[in-house]
Length: 462
Ligand SMILES: [Fe+2]
Ligand SMILES: [Fe+2]
Image (tube, rainbow, N blue to C red; front, side):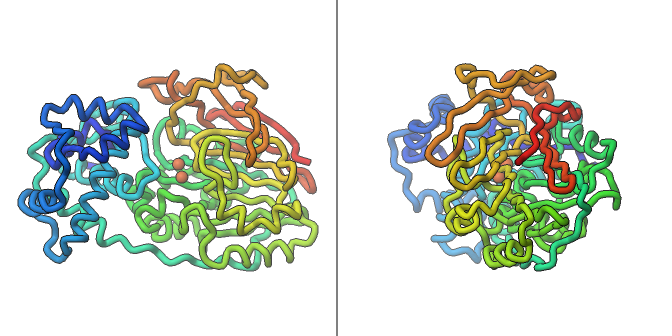
């Protein structure tokens, strides 16, 4: 029987790691520098021999004897995969913060491993219910036989990157009065994600366009697209246009679920799209196909659309960020779009990927409003923002805290508070929600909402 949500945490697969191989000294010292979590775990392991260097041939022998990797792979391939797998498990151990709470990592092999183990755990009935209809995969030593081999031969090797599909140079026409709902990093099927969907679907007046800013966990394969996305997407039928931008987690499976299932379901011809009325051009970019970059002919495509748009204001949507206070900068994006940015041609840009909600001040050089809406479904760990001033206290108990700018990013406010939807540890996780854009003739009014629709931020962009 198909279960609700299946999550893969470190504790459920730790026994596998211990049976596969001990963490190598290189892994341990790397983890030691970055995070003490794995070190604590490795040291708890009585089998851990941190002093002995790992011999590649020993790894291969072990792999061949115990786990029968597919014979068509040569030794180098096996070694590369083995190292990738080990690294994946280390990444999973580092990211796992609260038992029973979903987490994902920006790491392809780790995400594929989580997808694989979720399916494997479900088919082998190795699941433990950690919350109503939420199941955690629990493997023990005896489950080890053959699983690595099938991960590599049946899964990893068969992944083919779906081709990029160029966008149409004819924008889809939208009305001058259009209401758009935005959700980012929403594809968990868990926590407040279903509630935000329901609020959007029941909103009155209704939304005309509903857009996902990307990330369906763990690797956006077909099953995950169905179970974490389509099963929970706002049920609006043909009353609203639904669109989804491409993202890194979708591409970890080669875009299998995104291109193969999601785009057809949404009747969206390409991963990039353009909507236009008399005053605005709204463009969805694909920064997932080439991670944090613009694949295909997107730069020329956007140039053409912008030229055709005349004096219309331009709003960009993408999964990855052009700039950030906490994470990597969108160097490739900014380099490729620099002429449009420095000409002040981009009015506003909404993105996800970082799991937070941030409203930046107008970019001084680009005269652009940047917004991070990456908090719609992923349970994200809170940083301590208590030393930053409260810019606004919200009705639901959350606050906006003021952050200084950096060389790259303007000053901003960040949404801080508790997350009652993560019942295991509400104080440790930050608030979730979604955003809306209301176009009304030449005016653009934006809002940030709590999952139940409560307005936490409202601003007319000028
Ligand atoms: Fe994400
Ligand atoms: Fe992402």
